[in-house]
Length: 128
Image 1 (cartoon, rainbow, N blue to C red):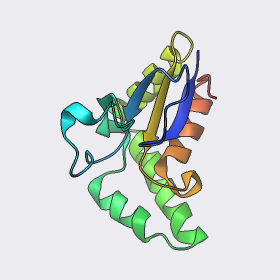
Image 2 (image 1 turned 120 degrees about the horizontal axis):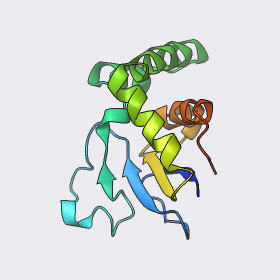
Image 3 (image 1 turned 30 degrees about the vertical axis):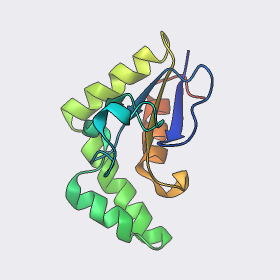
Image 4 (image 1 turned 120 degrees about the vertical axis):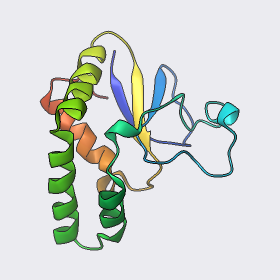
């Protein structure tokens, strides 16, 4: 049982489990009924995505310093009680079932999902 960190829209791996989209907005031009069949996500969970304002900063982060500033602010957002409890829940569930969480970004190193990976690991999640 594990959590996989994935790029939404990428082909699913065997045993991946429920795919959770931790993105601020659903994909444009795709009908809701097609999200799962197009390997986007099964459940939309924007609670674990950066706020609108912070998302703009992330997209504009063109150097290491700007990325670190985004990362620090996103970690602060994830320390809020609701987000913190949601991360705790996912970490606990990773010991009971397979699931994946993801975002659309091509490069995980410059995506909030890399920060989610770190936060989940700190909570004892089983990650793959």
